Image 1 (cartoon, rainbow, N blue to C red):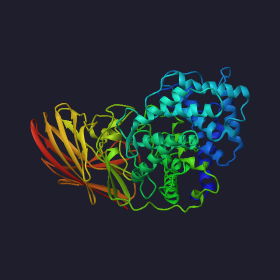
Image 2 (image 1 turned 60 degrees about the vertical axis):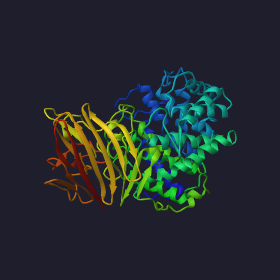
Image 3 (image 1 turned 180 degrees about the vertical axis):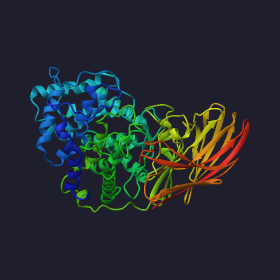
Image 4 (image 1 turned 120 degrees about the horizontal axis):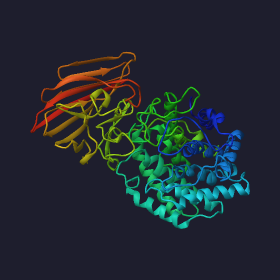
Length: 568
C-alpha cells in the first residue's frame, strides 16, 4: 500500500481496525482478541483492547474522519464501561493498575475529539466517566512515563469542566522535568536503559501536552517541543532506508509504534526536519510493517515482532497490547490542507556513517542498507523478560534482528547471537552479558566491563569497521571454559541458504544477506549454531556463525573476532 495522501493513511488505519468491529462485546466496553495471559485480570485485558484503537480513531475524528459504526461502539462502550451497575463495568482500581495506562487514550479523545468521545454522552454517562478517570489520582502509579497518564487525565477533566487534581497535575509535570537528561533525551523514571519509551512515551505524551496546553502553559510547551526537535536529530538514526526501525529494547510487540514520535512531531507543529522527510519515514515504516507476518487469519494483530511469537513477549503483552502501535497515526489529526499531506515522501537525509549517541549509550552504524547499533549494555539486570537479549548484546540490526533465549541450557536453546557466550566445563549452562559493570562510549568504539558469572571478568571493545565490526575481549576466568563469540543470526530455509565452518572462520548466508566471523585466540575454531525455532524476532528459523575459544583456569587471555556482514 503506497502511503501519500491523507486518504491513504486513513485506509491503512481501516485495514487494521475494521477486523475488530465484529469482536466488540454486546455492550461495546470489552474487546476479546485472544486467550494468552498477562499479569492483570480479564477485565483489564479486554478494557485495554477496547482503549488502544482510540490512539488512531481520536486523530482520525479530530482530522475530519467519519466512521459511524466506531462512533456508536465507543459511545456505548464508554457509557457501559464506566457504569457501576452495568455487567461490562471496567471496575475499580488497585495501585499500579493497568487501566491507568488505558485512560490516556480516552483522555486524548476528550481533549482532541470531544465531539465524538465526550459530547454524545448523556449527563449521567459524563459523570460516570469523569469519576472513573479521576480514580488515577487516588492510587499509586509508577514513577516513570505513567506520570503522563495522570497528567493527560487531569488535563482532559479540566478542559471539560470536571473535578481534576491540580496538585497531582503539577507533581506529575515536576517528575517529568526531573527525568530530563539533556541533549533531547529523557530517562524513563528510575530506569537507566534508553529505548523506544523515550520516543513513543516521554516525547510523544510531552508533544500531546504541548498541543493541548499551549495557551495555558506556553513556556513548558515550548520546552517539550524544543527537546523533541533536538531528540529527532539522534532518533532519525534508528531507521533504515527501507523503513525498518532498530529492533532493540522492550515492548517490541507494539511494532509500528516505533514511528509514533514522528507522527507526534508533525502533529505538534515541529518543522526542524522537513515534512517530506518525516512523511517518508512514516510511510516507509508503515509499509514495511504491512509486509511482515503480523496479522492472524482474521486480520487481527498478533503478539510478536516480525511474526507471531510469545517467546519474545513481555509479561504485560496481552492480546490487545499491539494496538498501542496505533499511536503512529496521530498525523491523521492534521487538517486536510496541512503541508504534510501535500509533501512528497522524501528519502532520509545524508547521515553520518558512524554516530555516537551519547545519551543512548550506544554507537549507531549505517552499513549499506542496514542500521546497526552497538550499545554499552546499560539496563536493569532483571525486569519484564529477556532483558539481556533486548539490551545487552554487542550489536543489533534492522536486517538481522536479534534472538531471545528459549532457555539458558545448551547453545541452540540460548541462541546467543551477537554475544560472547561462556560454557563452563562440566556444565551445559550458557552465560552471557546481562549488564555492564562499567562502560565508555567513545566516538569509534564501545568499551564495557562485565561479569557473566562470578569468577569470570570480561572487558570488551566493539569497534565499527567498513564491512561490520571487530570485538576485542580481555578475559579473566577462575574456570576452564569454552567461549563462543557469535555473529548475527541468518535466516535459513530460504533461497540461497548456505553455511560452512572451516578453520577459524564460519559463514552463514542466504540470497539476501550473510554474516561471516573469523577469530584469533586460543584454539579458535569456527562453528555454526543451529538456533531453536522462534528465537529470532524477525524470522522463525536461523543459524548463527561463531568462533569457539578455549579459556583456561586462572589465565588471562585476549580474543579478537571480526564480524562482517552483507545485505543485498
